[in-house]
Structure formats: structure tokens, C-alpha cells
Length: 159
Image (cartoon, rainbow, N blue to C red; front, top):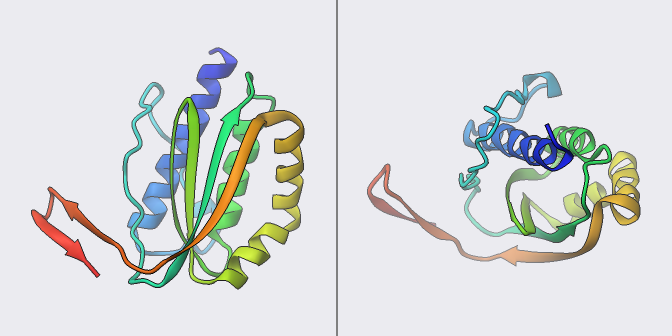
């Protein structure tokens, strides 16, 4: 498997595990409860995080990757597990088609600040600047309203 295909597979695996976490409405007791078994070649991850009623916060991470994996998949999987255990973590959504966009949801600004300072996350950030990303931008927003639609339920979801 090429580095590029391996990276895409790792990202899809991570997204699937996050989807299972956020749609279960539970937080895992341990990282062992997160499963990273996702069929190879299935690069469609369009599930939407289940978030509580606003207000809450969104951290939007937009990036362009460098070529090659260079350990990215392994660290990304580890960081996702770690983030899911942090106080205030609500869920995540991610997509990559050229530009990568990952939105993580948090209950408050203090939780975001503590996550940004987490020692393992800081180490991954340094690796990202040095190896994995050509460029990135992080934005933090307060979600004051959200609404949606699900064909499954055939009704409009409004908080």
C-alpha cells in the first residue's frame, strides 16, 4: 500500500472510530473501547457529530498536508483517542479532499485551552509543523444555534 493510500486509510479509520464514539452518546471508559476497524478503500465519512443543545464551541482546523505519511496515521489515531477522553470533548467531524477540515466540538473554552496544552498534543503539534502540514489554520467559534435534517428520521432537527 502506498504512503498516500495508507494515510487515507488511517484517516478513514480514525473518522469511523470517532463517528462510533459520538453517535453512541457515550464516552469510552478507556481507549480500548475505541475500535479502529474500517474497511480498506472506504473513504466516505460523512457522518455528522451528535452535539448537545447550544451553546458549545467548535475548533475548526483547516490544513494542507505534505506528501507521505511519516508516522502521521499512527499519531493521529493516538491523538483522537486522547482527545475523546478529555473533559469537555463533545465530538468531531473530519473530511479531506485536497484541503483537510476537522471540526472538534467542546463544551467550553477552558476545555479547549487545556487540550491545546496537553503534552502529547503539543508534541503532535510540533511534528505537524515540522513534517505533516504544508499549512494550517485553527479557528475557534462559539456555536449559538444549530439545526439539521435527517432523511432517516424525515424531520427537521432544531434546537
